[in-house]
Structure formats: C-alpha cells, structure tokens
Image (tube, rainbow, N blue to C red; front, side, top):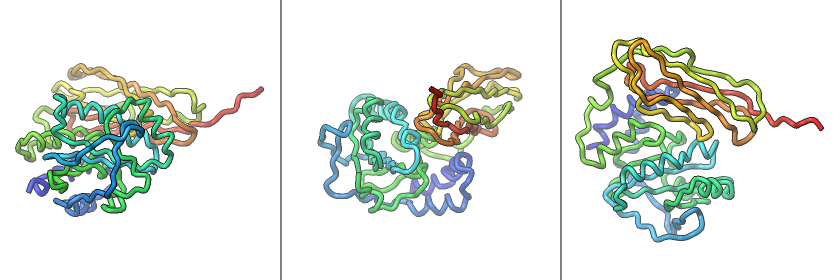
Length: 297
C-alpha cells in the first residue's frame, strides 16, 4: 500500500524537522495510522468566517484534513496565508478536486474569529467548540501529525503538515497527481555545503509592542550553487526576508528575521530553511522575553 511505501520517507522527513522525537516513536505513530479511517461527528456545521452557514459535502477522491486545538499559540498553528496558497495551487481551476477540511477547536472564539477576518480566510471551516472530532479519533498531540491526506473512504493515505514542511507538501501533491513515490524523493542530486554565523539568537528583554529584528548569514562553502527552496517559521509572528537568487560558491546570503509579539511573555521560535545543502533543512532559533513595560508618568 502507498502508506507502507511512505513510512521510511516520512521517518526521514520528521527526524530532521522534529529532532526531539525518536525514530521508533515516529515509526509506531505512522504505522498506527496506516489506512485508519477518520470518523466525523454528526451534525457538523461549516461556516465562512464563523458566520454564514454553507453546504459542504465531505465527498471527494482526496481530502486534506487539518485539526487545530486550543493549546499554545493559535497563529503559530493556523498559518492561514499558506493554506490559502496551497488551496489555490491544488484547486486553482475552481473545481475543488481536493476537499480541504478545516476543524478548529479554539479556546478564545472571539480572538479566533478576528484572526479569520484579518486574514480574509473565506474557505469553509468547522468550529468544533466541543472538540468532538478529536474525541472520536484521538489525534496525536504533536501538531505536525494533526493533518492527514484521506482517500474517498476517509482512510489515511499519508500524515504530516504540508504547511510546515514543504517536502511533505510535495509528497501530498505526488500522491494526488498519481505520481510514483520512491526513495529518490528524499534526496537532491545537486548538493553543496554551507556554514552559518549562528544558529540561535536571543533578543533578551524588550517592550512587547516593539518589533525586534536580527540577521543570520549563510555562506556557500561548497563547489555547487546554493538554492534556497523554502523558508518556514513556527509562528505567524515571525517573518523572514531573503534573496531568492542562487548563491554562488564562496558567496553569502542574509536572512533578515523579524519578530512582533502578539502578547507579553517568553518565546522560543524556529525558522526552518530548506535548501540543497547536505545538512538541509537548517534550523534557526530566536528567543527572548517580551515584557509589558509601563511608561512613567
């Protein structure tokens, strides 16, 4: 089966993106979801921006289901802008050949609806206030494993978040388009070597209302051109600006990283750089303490 063929590939991907999980744990998790049917609660209501109820059928050859709970930073998990891009990429002709099933279980409903409005997210969603979907299926606690590619019988074909990991996205697209999957998909033919000035940076203490910025410098120390394929962040409050041009051997490229806190508190965010380096993906981290500073009168 397709899922069995993908097990070793997914283990490779998640080992490099979820370094805190053991290979055995990942393999057991993937195997436990092999062709498992996802159950849906009765009486589901899909709305647009949480207001207008819409008719939404779950039928389709393939469906991408994503579940978001109320734990942690919601904007980190949602990444609505990237979901909109993926939907347009897959269903660009408006045919809705692949159904996207969004189940959100927000703790702060008003704040969540505000996020939908500000992001202009006009795709149908199900606000699962009672967390019924998760209670029926007992999804993994790691959000990287709370997104599934389902077949027409709602059985899991693949598991992984295509928004947070572009390699998982590529695999989803290959399966949907009927392409053959093989181990050659996990490596690049043209690879180079890189060095980086630092892999982490602390902003220390600062006023949470003030945006913070820093840079990471990546140098191509190999003998092949360096291509930055994609850069993802673990949170919507973290932005990265960089050149899309290839980096020639001996040259450098700079990642300008910005952080704008949504609320006061300590943070530890991750930037993942996918490129054709032998050690790809590269993991960069920023941290700090965003404080609520009272102005003296």
